[in-house]
Amino acid sequence: MKEKVAVATVQGRAYFLLVNALHEQGIGFISLVPGQPLPSKVKLVITTEGEKAKVNYDKVLVFHGEAELESLIIEVKKMLAGKEAPERIVVGIDPGEAIGLVIVADGKVIEEGNCYSSHELTSSIVKVLRTVNFSVTSVVVKIGNGVPVYKELLEDLDYSLPPQAALEVVGEAGTNRPLTMHSRKIRHISSAIRIAGRTGHIFARRKAIAANNTSQ
Image (cartoon, rainbow, N blue to C red; front, top):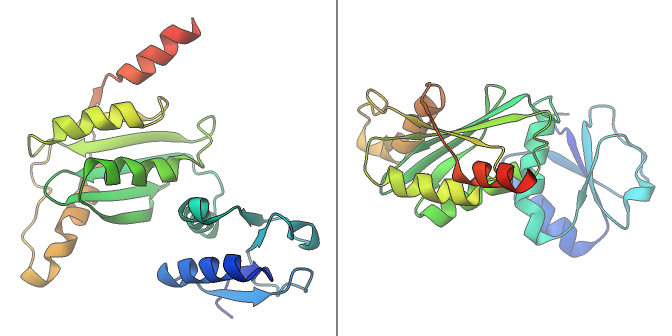
């Protein structure tokens, strides 16, 4: 049995949304009725608020609705990776017409893809950081400086991201490597991974400064 996730609900809409999201991410699962005994290899259970009292297990994620589905799937990935609260999250961004994005938790990629607007980029990152406990997890967002648009993206990130997230500007020399026509769609993701692994220059966040001034 490879499935480590159990979906325990008899609510039709919740079940439909959950299993489709798990399928899309390639996450194996089994379906159970709340209260049904769990196979030994199950690592976590997804259920609903009204049914969680029937689930006798210590690792339970609660589905609160479609609006929070993406955040729930991100949490599933983190728990399956072996840590509920990673020590460090690094976000790598490769600016361009297609913006490469990769999110790495303790050295393991948990999200990757291409974004096509600043709004899509910031929304994708915010969804991941929404579940982060900043008292135990450090977060740094690294953006390449290879094209001028990075400055606009940097301003949007400073405005949109939580003040606890650090921003770094990273030199892109050598991050873009020749790829075949067939693999061009992953070019920006590959560059984002390399950017995430480099050390950049700290960007002084105005949002963090404002938050500090307000607290004084």
